[in-house]
Length: 253
Image (cartoon, rainbow, N blue to C red; front, side, top):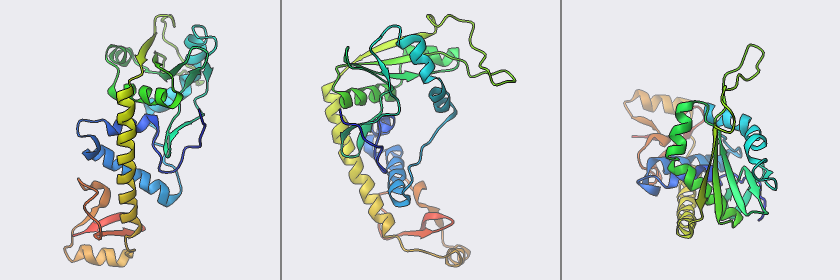
């Protein structure tokens, strides 16, 4: 397993689900992600999108490891800041690796009883895809989704007010077996995704600069100005994209 710094424009396991929606790479979700990855390369800055749920998970992962994983898997190592390269710009960052038992784990920390049971009864498809990608990165045949219900409520001093439920009851290990066909599909779709990213990147790099005044005058003369990222298909606008420092990449019709 080779560690790697998360490359600009690269694709991690937490994002792979965007390539496996019903429409696959034709979906706007996948194209929007390719656009964001192209922007990372252009701007030289990695954009980390953190929702409230993601932030809660990041704050509680280590507690979940110490409370429920370490006692059951003594040889497991919490290493959520270490990324493993799969191929090129494709990587995964498992939360926990147990080399002795050859298992990889991804920790999820729902903070409501409803979401905890919703997740353990039917884990989200993109959680399953994420686990498969982590097994692909490690070469292990077994992965676990580890769900740990833990509160997001604090007192006036910032101390967490935990659920009055035993930790033994509010966690669940869901075992997942490696799927080689799915792994091949991950690699195939990732290659196609990066081709799409690079097409969008090329179109953006070739977009001429347009000044505030020019943009304003065109809008005033009844030209329609649309944000590039709002278009339904981002692969069909070659030569029609402009870059304005305040508006970003736009299309003028």
